[in-house]
Image (cartoon, rainbow, N blue to C red; front, side, top):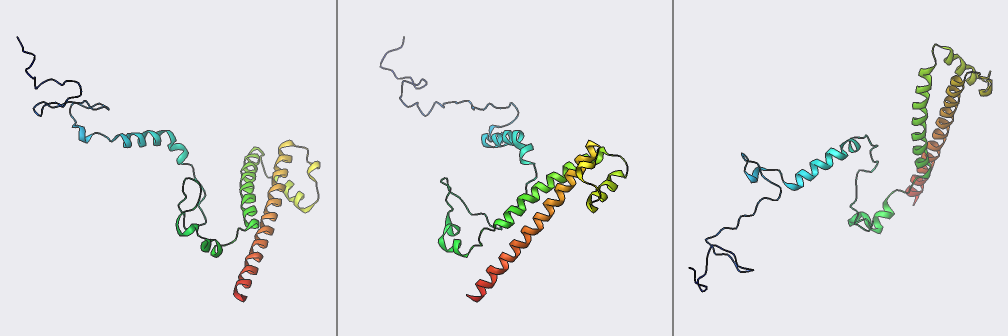
Length: 190
């Protein structure tokens, strides 16, 4: 029989510390392997990163256009630039936003899309007749409405759109170049 005043060192009583003789065993919350020590198992953060890479890997593998700027300032959670790049002096010394160049870059993206569609439609048309039709269209012998074949008309329409975009891009690049030259001359004279 056990007396009530005897203290048992092997059991834990509500919120009382356990004796140093007894070790509390807590199972690993992520599980374990029989032949592998727990310290060699993957870290939970590493497992999470692997799961994210498995799900978002194809999206992250998509090609992106590079940035024009060599630096990338740090931005805080409110969207403000931190450090020296967020100063007024940096804003004054930095280049102005070039609207013409920005618009030319957006038109360049449109041109790439039109050229892709042009290649797709071009594959649908056999032979060299497509080149002859485009030559006559360029020379002004025929108009877009004169073309009877729908595929050939689509090819000619895309080709005209691509030429128009190329001309607009060239004009905008020239405006941007002239604007940069004016700013450089104004800065040298000041």
